[in-house]
Amino acid sequence: MMIKRNRTKLSLVAGVVCATLLTLSAPAAHAGPAEADHAATLKALKTFQASAGPGAAVHAGGPGGSWTLSAGTGTINTDRPIRSDEHFRIGSQTKTFTAAVVLQLVDEGRVSLDAPIADFLPGVVSGNGYDGTRITVRHLLQHTGGLAPFAPQVVIDQPPSNPDGTYDLAVLVRKGLSHAPVSAPGAAFAYSNTNYLVLGMLIEKVTGRPVHENVTRRVIEPLGLGRTVFPAPGDRALPAPAVNGYHGLRVGGFFLWTPALSYDPSLFSSAGAMISTLEDLTAFYRALIAGKVVSAAGLAEMRKLREVGPGVAFGLGIGRKELSCGVMAWGHDGGVPGYMSQTLVTEDGRHASVVTNALFQVGMPAEQLHALLDTALCEDAARRP
Image (tube, rainbow, N blue to C red; front, side, top):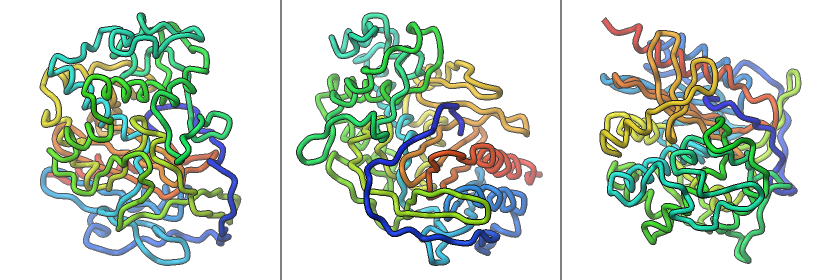
């Protein structure tokens, strides 16, 4: 994935599900006009899907138009290709939407990037070695405030829920801050969901509205993203049409898929609750990079980078990756039970978004995902006159 971090996770909750054991065979690729025109990307997609979930798809293109390729299936025991307009849970790609709302509040003069978070949420980021008077809004957006990694879906990390099964942002934050700091504020990059849960609280405090309403009214609706949803707490539905998500593992020539268990989206909230499609995700990131979501000054702040790995840097809610064709691409990845995805766009209008319908506990095919995105974006450039 774009952001290097520990992805080892436990199951959400023990449960009884139906398992399907299948013999591994060459993944089915679904014919269409794009298949012959994008042979290199199709090959990379097959390689990715052979190490990923039951199915995988890439939606890509440039200023001249978009195309979609699919391999495997969106529903086990069927031959149903994943389509570019089908809903899935986007996980941490939610963070870019949350960051965009924070930058809009900066544009409006209601938030300052370099103000301590304690100015807005006094006493929230405190105790256990944390000092909210030294951790700024910018630190939270860029994962440089020293907040420890926090995976709320892991059994030992799950916070207490409300009687109706929903989760409060403040409770999530307190659970995240129960982990001791990993560095002094500003000293190092450390990816943590807690940063964006605190930012969700910030948005709610400044606007007086729930974070899901802010993202909907400020980003989703103005951009006309008709198949993108930030579900309210308690709304567990995945709108139709949908990609079915699975847990799974691969051992030699066999793989095991079990349906991903249902969970309340408020477990991830402003760090990872959203639902979208491949088409809508590329539309969002293209609009963001084109300056249609935040001001030019806000976008410049988002693109102030910190190197986090070879060829990879992270700004404020968005990462930058250098492609093999020498172009810089911008985007984010996401992983929640049932789904692994990533979207990248370039300033000249190229775009690629990938999803597979499983999130492995171990052995996720990150390198194959990188290769697929790189091929889709660079192949499109190579085809131009």
